[in-house]
Amino acid sequence: MLRYILAAATLAATMLPSVSFAEKKATDTAERELVTRTEVPGQNFRDYLTLFKPRRELEPQKMSYSKDWLDQQPKATGDENFKCLAEALYFEARGESVRGQFAVAEVILNRVDSGRFPDSLCGVIKQGTGKKYQCQFTYTCDGQKEVIREKKAYERVAKVARAAIDGVTKELTEGATHYHTTAVRPSWSRVYKETARIGVHIFYRHNYRTASN
Image 1 (cartoon, rainbow, N blue to C red):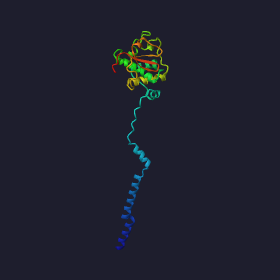
Image 2 (image 1 turned 180 degrees about the vertical axis):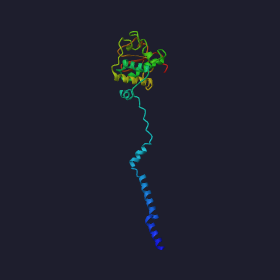
Image 3 (image 1 turned 90 degrees about the horizontal axis):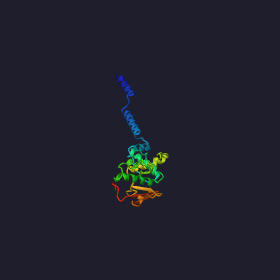
Image 4 (image 1 turned 90 degrees about the vertical axis):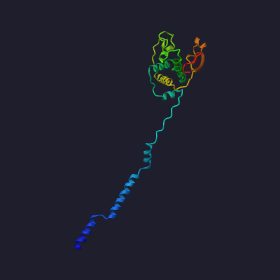
């Protein structure tokens, strides 16, 4: 009987691991898992953290009367009045400086606000059109077809028109509602108040101010 008991004990010892061995194995496995979870390369961890950093807000771009500033602006679009102003700037002032183009746009906007002219940009620009050389803006009644041949110049003045309509710029002409080039001297220039000279244009205001001023 004793012989059977010893044999059974020996068999159990060979088939079942000891408690201490099993605990050691469990401890080793836990340690390996812990190392696996914490072994994250420092650079990768920093990259991971950057995903949650707040995005830096872009600073608003400062307005500048320059071609560089215009070229950085998105393509200008708008309604019929925007198109009328862009066209007027192309034919009236595309050869002027950017500041001069904004000044011409300001005059047209001042007319819209004044109450003495039509109350829309297209209305102001086309006032008198149909009567040769009796219109407000010569290109609309000089008998020549308006054809935009300089695409780059048009794109730039269109951006001027968009910025002027959106009120991006400050006042340049002190409320002027009239202008002429330095090559001519119309009779009305003797009675209107000169307010500014920008490029080849001289700007004037009547003895009233526009509604916006």
